[in-house]
Image 1 (cartoon, rainbow, N blue to C red):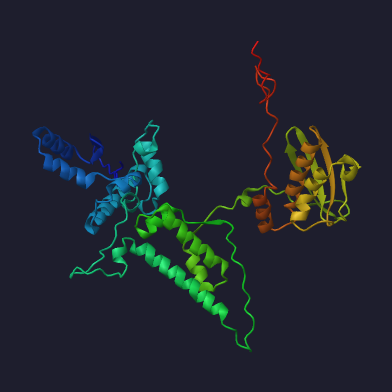
Image 2 (cartoon, rainbow, N blue to C red):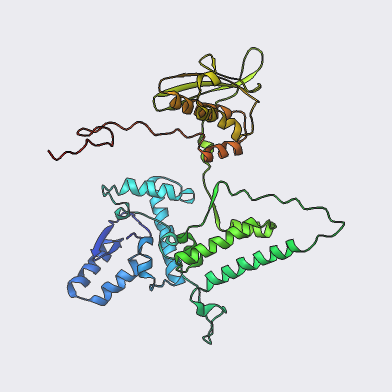
Length: 396
């Protein structure tokens, strides 16, 4: 468990372990009072102390869903957190107004060094909203009647969301089925580009709805959203879909792209290297050409008699629709013909990144053109005929 705040101003911070609960005493007086209460056997005081200071981590939220925290309790915890943050900033010689969560984590790790392997057992200081589970608002009035008409389903937020999603699907289908006016210009509808984002996972959706969902409920909701994406809706539907998407870091931004160079004649070219097994290839791709390719000074049709190896070399150009637009000069050594073809393909794909857009680079990454093939020949094992093959068993 973790305490919502840690405040130290000329006082000693102590932790009292009672079962699974952890009590953080901010003064020696509180420690003596809790110890005296423990010796006297006053169970009510200890339980009250545990209830006010014990905090559940997110891992234990499903087991303690019956616990409720009032708004006054959360406000009090936030005030203590802000006070502790100011004390911590003063101790570290920082400005309390610009003291961020990263600074807090760094200060806690410096002031309370811990060699515990489990991170959840180390002392932390987080905002109460990140520690305490989100509480559902009051769902009924003073007369005892529920506000929402789906209250008795047990999952009113989920079914209300499903109802709204299906309603938007019906609206889009109705709008598309109506014939457009005669004098109206055709609307330009662009397909939604979902590259670089993902759907909310089940835990994130449960946190948003403050309801427990089954795998089947989550699957049905994602299917409805995917159906809404296939229908070319308007800005309202686009904004609704983006509420349940989370951006992901684009891996193509981490791809090192060689800058375009120019020779004496002013022709643009790019160089790159590629490997496959023990084969190593160096490639020069020219920005303008007729599709010629030489490998170690020999035409690639003569160097690679197998059709499959030739297709490996042409696949990056075919994927980007650039067949016959570049000239390539390759130098390869080591390995066999198949490994050399794989090394050249990787080098060509990396060199083509200098002549294409960022979106095309991302498409190449998703197609596996920019990833090295890690497969190598498996070693022979002792007591066996080969890497996997065993000797023929004989009884005598």
